[in-house]
Amino acid sequence: MTAISGGRSSKPSKTPATQTPSGLTHPDKIFWPDEGYTKLHLAQFYESVFSRLQPYVKGHLLTLERCPDGMQGECFYQKEAPKGLPAGTPTKAIRHKNGVTHYVVGGALATQVALVNFGCIAVHVMAGTAGAPRQPQWVCFDLDPASGQFGDAARAGLHVKEALDELHLTSYAKTSGSRGLHVFVPIRKGPDADDVLAFARAFCVRLAAAYPRELTVEHSIKARGERVYLDSFRNGFAQTVVTPFSVRRKPKAPVSTPLAWAEVTTKLNPSNFNIGNFGERMKRPDPWADFFEDKQSLSAAAKSLSRL
Image (cartoon, rainbow, N blue to C red; front, side):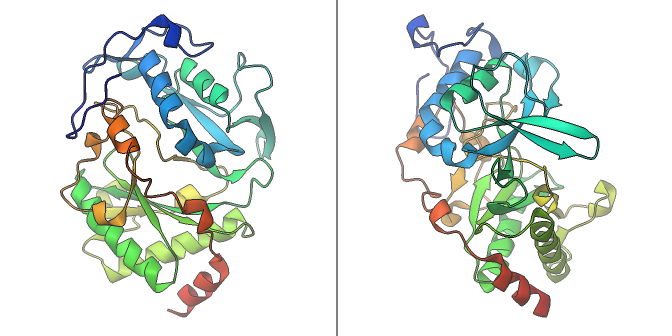
């Protein structure tokens, strides 16, 4: 896969079979017909970014979004670990009200390549780890613009950052890989998922009330109008979000890309970050390099929020 600069996708050339990751079958299967990207290009992309992706999946529980035919077919979600994973792939049994689910546990490159082999394009991860599934490592805010315009999500993201700053919480932004923006807050191990969800919901309600013409927490799509939906529900137990450096099943094969806050502008086009040119992005410092060094206590922020 040839990397280019300038925010455009390159047309990948035929890759020698000797570079096919171990265990990958049908490497020439086309996943993105318009761009010519294959299953092999997807696997090679994850190999190239795995050093940066790994911290967000290591020990974390994964949900599989399987798209066996890439952009040309249907997708389905699977929580139960599929048969055919590499020997020794770790799993974690979680009891839900409807029974027990054995989740794949991320962290190994072999696991990531195996998921690509199952048609998994995106990487969906829970905030908790196998050792402490109910104790999230981050708070996530998913900003979904009803207009479909990333510029609206960017403006909303800056409101979110300002409000988090007031609570003395350091935040990190990334493209969702689609039309929205994700804002993460790394937190110290301790709060239960229910407490993290309650904090996120209260934060979103207060922020939407402060900017009622721009932001909303309305569940009804019709009731949202043209406002940006502040989604806090990804913080619920067993809910997932795509990781940084996750590819999305969208035209141009966009990547959910970590951003410096200075990059969060209305002019940013998220599809300019894609598997055809991401090699150029990888040459730059990672804006999220300090993410796991910035773990913060949520208790003080929750108390401050309750007093507002």
